[in-house]
Amino acid sequence: MRSKSAEKVKLSSFDDLFGKEEPVSGEVVTSVPIDLLHPFKNHPFHVLDDEKMEETVESVKQYGILMPGIVRPYPDGGYEVVAGHRRWRACELAGLEEMPVIIRDIDDDTATVIMVDTNIQREDILPSEKAFAYKMKYEALKHQGSKGKKYTAEMVGETAGDSGRTVQRYIRLANLISGLLDLVDVKKVPMIVGEKLSYLTREEQELVLEAMRNCEIIPTAAQAEAIKMFSEEKKLDGNAIYGLLLKKKNSGNGVTISAKKISSYFPPAYTKQEIENVIYTLLEEWKNGREEELEHGEDTI
Image (tube, rainbow, N blue to C red; front, top):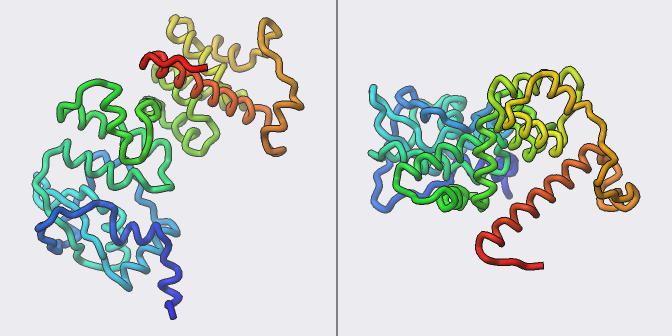
């Protein structure tokens, strides 16, 4: 019969115990004092003392660390953790003094790729985590000699199954100020809106965020595109932002679809703005798909 402790161990806990990285044949596992470990520089993934961590700590107490972390020598002594930050934290909380690791003498770019790839497949990753992780891996692959912006982006997303275009959109989010990026993380601002606002200067983004809070309005994709265009034309200021956010829809040469027909595609709980954001997101994906087809000489109907 399985013990109650074993029943509480969820998949995420097993990932923390076993890890996702593959050890190289012949590598030696050694235990090092956890007070000699240092976090990876600009580590983009959050290590939280949440319920999942509690489960991991219980597992560590019972089973130990089943897959060693990966570290590399730290310039000022000790070791920098490349893979295994959650296991390291679990060891601390479990009261362990040492952690099993594999020591690799690797350069910054190789270490960055390993760090990102061993974390990126988790199901609970926030958009902000992916944004900075993909940006770090993209720069690392460029340093390693990857040629072509599109090809490099495809390599970045390969581990997680994301397309090159999706990777580029996540990387754009890394240009958002923290206030806007936080709203993307909690799904108040759709990713497509965040991407468009990421092209604004930091000062312009601060103005947009202030206006959003004052008006209690989240821009639609169309409004975000208009704000971006005003910025490109050097016409974006506080008055323009408020005007664009509060502007009512024009009844000009637009396409009108009955609300009854649209509502049949959405759950009853969806608000008007949520429906609009989904439609704009799908149209954007369709547009990007058409652009890729034309780029490759494909023109399908």
